[in-house]
Amino acid sequence: MTSIDVHALTKEYGARRAVDHATFRVLPGRVTGFLGPNGAGKSTTLRLLLGLDRPTSGTATIGGRPYTALPEPLRRVGALLDAGAAHGARTGRDHLRALAASNRLPARRVGEVLAETGLTPVAGHRVRTYSLGMRQRLGIAAALLGDPQVLILDEPSNGLDAEGIVWIRGLLRRLAGQGRTVLVSSHLMNETASFADHLVVLGRGRVLADTSLRAFIDAGVRPRVRVRTSDPAALRGALARHGLDAEEQAEGHWTVRGARVDDVGRLASESGVPLLELTAEEGTLEQAYLDLTAGEAEFAASSREA
Image (tube, rainbow, N blue to C red):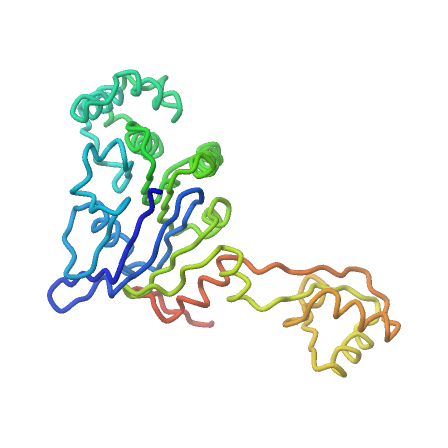
């Protein structure tokens, strides 16, 4: 089993501790979202995983070995950290050919990953003419070149258009479905919710959460019920008698926090309150994430009410 294992990982730059005894595991067969505010230590952790920096203490291994000890690492780990890493004077095809030749990969893989990432029509164009989204696709193509069991991608949706975003979602899910280990760092909560099975959340270098996506949302967001009625006074009275409060919304419905649909429906029925709408308002990843990391952001804009 090829897993990513981080144990008590710490990285200090002088007096600043960028990663603080982080411990987590990324397993095959699922997409793990890697989240955290700016300055949380995500990029540093990825650099430590890929041998681009040395930890102050602790370990970061892939399949039980440090990246630097892996034989033919491109065959085992595909990574995208910087979409601008390709030389601008090379064509996209030549960039991939150079990677394939230097890592003893079959030349046929170049054409295969160009097709998989949709770059075949522009493969002969110089990289400096590529848009940000095209450079992103080229970086993903390079990560896939060795057909690796482990993928580590930093902001893979960055710069992609709507079609590209749908494509990357499907690609990540397919790779995980093939039993690969997929770790994806992102700032886009809605995007992460669309493809992630599991989450690791960092804040100020520490692991704040290591759990499934669904468990993370359920633990971080109180349940809410959306309800519409022709008799708001009767509804509020029925709920108040059971310690619940209905809050009126501008759209004309009411929100009951900390309640379940079954509870509100039963209370309304017992009290003879007519209901026009009764639905559960599902918590979102963004809500749960912002609540968890509210005090962990190194950089945050101040907000003022007019």
